[in-house]
Length: 156
Image (cartoon, rainbow, N blue to C red):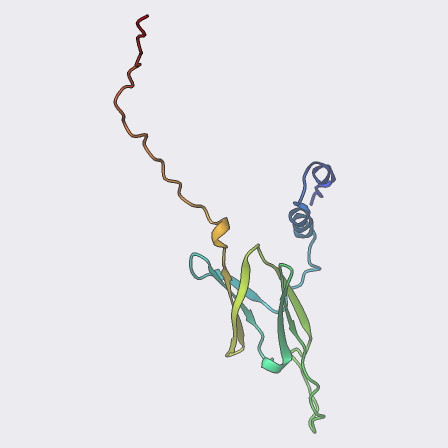
C-alpha cells in the first residue's frame, strides 16, 4: 500500500491538520484489530447507531467516553472468584478491549444501551443554525415610472 505525504499541504493550508492526520491514520492498519465486532448504521437523516457485540460484559465493565472528536469504548472484565472446577477448554474470551471511532464535527452521543450482549450507541449530528445552509430571498426591484428631468427656467 502506498503512503501519501501530506506535508506540502500543511504548508499551504490553515486549520486542516485534523483532516490530514485522520487521512494518515486511515492509511495505517489497526494491527488487525477485530474484537469486538461492530456495525455502524444510519438510522435517519442525522442519526446513526454503532452496535457492538460485547457478549459476557455487563454495564459495570463497559465505559464509553466522547472527547475531542473521538468516541472510545472500553471493556474490562472484573476478576471472577476462583471457581472450584477446572476448564478443559476456554473459548469465551475474558480479554479487555478498547475501540475508538472518529466522530465528525457536531456529532454527539445521545444514548447508550446494553441488551442481549449488544451495546447500542446512538449518535446525532446536530449542526448549529448558524452553520446550516439558509435560503436567501431575491427581491425584485419595484417598477417605478421613468424619472423626468425637471428644469427651472430663469427669466432675466
